[in-house]
Length: 155
Image (cartoon, rainbow, N blue to C red):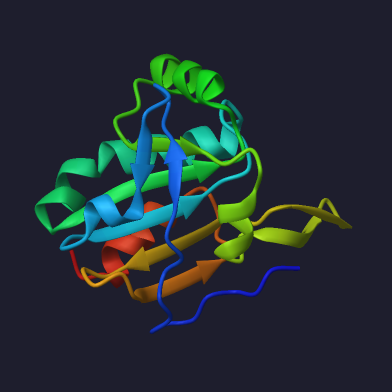
């Protein structure tokens, strides 16, 4: 079980492939705030709703100084299909090894339909301009989550 991040922690560095196979690093966003959200699987209903909500609010978030990166254990090919099918504008990166998911505390035991399983814990980490954790939200709901983040961040 990976340890959850706390406010003030240094966000773990990462470089992962995007839907086109290009490397995306957290360090590329230094000087801007970044919302890094972790979701179980591309092309599934809840994850689609969440990605569409982030896409629909991307301009608002960008205008407030936030970049958005979605992380799942999917390979770039599946992310590309997801992006095309749903016309997504958020940056999607894949972590098939689950190393980054684990480093962020977004992979481990969770309850699914009453059973304890090991998998991706739907989570959102807000990273400040200096690479520190501003907010760490775990076990979030796919529906309504983006609106709650916008409200909580005062955007």
